[in-house]
Length: 152
Length: 281
Image 1: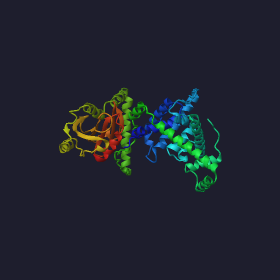
Image 2: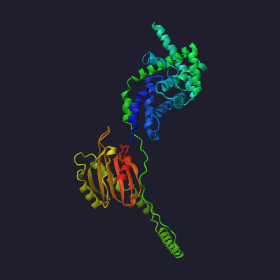
Image 3: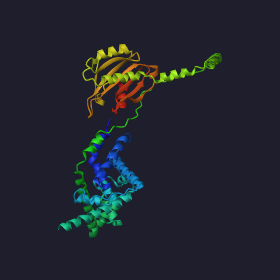
């Protein structure tokens, strides 16, 4: 019997990185990963071993995050501002982007998902993913140039 | 942060970089890149953004993962999975009474009904009977004896089995003779279980054979998993899957015997083990 817990532990750094693109702080990201992995274990019978398990897990993290945001809105709790002190300057640049842009960049440029796969994970259309991705790349390129100029 | 919407040309170049452009679109963009230096510059700019994202996300992956997250996943209980175990065979009988048989049946039912009615009407103390039968229904059943034996021996390190695993012929003869159930000793190594030996005991006065296994792989404590069997019992003629006093039970029945897999309630794969054993025993 394939134990999903082994897969989850192996994928944990990547799951946490995706959660960082959705949340404002590392603490929130860790809590999001904790909730999503608990759900994945509880619903592991739904995973039939077809395709990449990452698609399902990233999707689970995104929906868990969306549910949590809705709960907070209902309770009238403010959404925390992004922590701009995370990681090095490159990491700060990508995490400072709008969360949809940041997630699209990670899913397509780093995780290698196609536009349609990334769209399914994020619950948006492929056109939205294409648009977010392009805008994020242009922004990062400009940020990189500005940083280089400041250093010069 | 700039939130300007990308232009159609920027979108085309971005999709081209990702290999998401159609064949004709790809040829058009390639022609533009060859002929137009401004388009080339824009293409390089988008590519730079993409490379910067990769580097930044690679750095994020180097951050240490909190240990409590790892522990939380490792220690989480797996959900119990529904596995179809062999059911008791249903006996098909044709019911086609002749006219004479139907008449005798009706007369007999009338006589029984009249008798019961007379008894109920003439004896006001009858409700006590229901109290007695209700008391009987909450009595211990044979599975409680099976669990009691499991709990008694599962913690034993030196006296786990009555006959050790290295005497399989002795085990087969002893248990088959006394329980009246012929069986094989299932090899459950694929579930990380090593056969330790066997025992014989009585549950509600009927002999029960017990095959004992110890888990030899995995991170947790070495669980003891037991397969018990006895001749078919009228009250055991149904499959049971439940937890009693922190002990998990999965039972199944065949025409000749009733089998039970027993383990700690934390053994998430008990149904799996039972399903395997059902095919091997």
